[in-house]
Length: 336
Image (cartoon, rainbow, N blue to C red):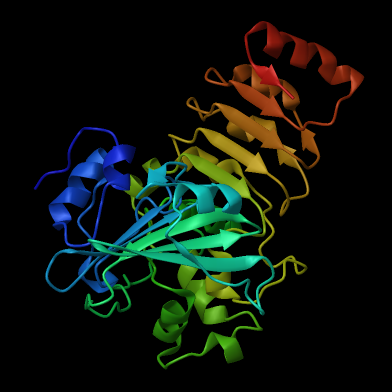
């Protein structure tokens, strides 16, 4: 079935239950729907980082499990996400609430049997931050590694800075627009052997890094990038160095001129990983709405050349920049 043009239906997502057909998931996801790849083992996680929903389809083609995280601030099976433990007891008096975990401070679980399956709540510091409904008898296909395309081009291509490419790949991974499996699957692929990152993940894996910086990103993927953040918590870094702590500068970015290859970029945020940002590099980005820079910057007047800019923040205030920020505010830009 072709993807719908309708937006995601949060109410329909909240109403998903074990035993429903996969078509119910497709309808609820609307235009966000993509047919799950065979290697995913029935996992539909496209909305994990946006709406906070993961669905798993069983071997019969039916919903076997639905997980909602704290991004999904709606009511599921009578339980509002974020409800306090005290209110939960009053709202769902027949729910079974477990004792606080001895190994995870402030965590406990609660369960209730529903006609469609088991309702399980994850409670952290007396608030519900996770809700799952699952069929305990469901059987699933085993997930496997995705097909890995052959590398091509120079390291970093089309970007001159390979580490900028890594930041772009982090954005694509977060948006579920890039599938390179798990860090362990990628490491096993590039090394040609089974890898246990609990043992081998304490050092950079050069072969994994080389694969990442030469990964053949498509024009469609580059066009899908709407948000880029320079931060050591980026999703891509564990694929090259599983236990990287952020202290080493191996992933630092030197040149951001390649951002022009992401023509639909709307948000650019810098927390770390670059010494200085030249704002002139952002001028080609005609759809850029938000710029958030927490490191030294130069040529800040180039913000005036961003036609779609709506928010600009965390720039170091100087007398020379006062007129620039004043003009931005006159144009309706929120400066913070």
